[in-house]
Picture (cartoon, helix red, strand yellow):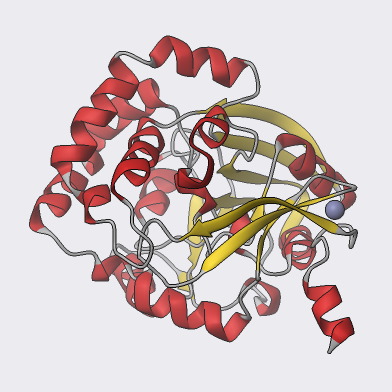
Length: 315
Ligand SMILES: [Zn+2]
């Protein structure tokens, strides 16, 4: 029992001891009960959510709270539709930054891990790739198939595709894995020689985290198991046999808006409806993008952006 607890509270990357960083962090989105702590690794700096949920507990959380089809509210759907119209969206990417690599062009076989209802796949296909998806949520996977894509419903570690991939996209996905090293090994296994992985995830050294503390929307406990900085992500990738090719920092206006909303509206144990309410979201996005943009640009340049986007090559 003691040993079990010990291994459960050690660093997922290097196995070193974890020290408390922030206490009393709660779910600011869906209102899941319970308080969590953020703990940092003494050696590699990777931060962790503790207590770490078990896989079966996580599966239940995802089923109950994470289904895109479960999103309610007609006005939110209206907002989504507007943001997702291709022309508007391309313009938005150019202004706000591309956290999901939707603007990258190229050729070859591409796998989108956690492809959801296949919106990203549509962009990757339009950009020249032969795009396929991996999605555990069967409702979302069916929606992506209805758009004409091959979508596998298997966990990454048991996934055996007929052919390897030239690109694997992990857009806001890696931080959800309970076994990060296994996930990175699997990416390597699934990639062709010289294949690339495109990873984006929240930056644990962002100014928003520093400014807003436990209200930072990207703690996203208990779903985010690990919280990466550019250092800890680079180290993890290099140790897994990848070479960093390109890094970029972005601060999406939506993440700024959501963090501000969480700061003022979230209550422990309650769903934060305002996160999906255009009356709150739209003015804050306009504020972030229209007024704060020099600040966001400066912070991105200084390594304090809210999202890390990394392209790494298998070596
Ligand atoms: Zn560590």
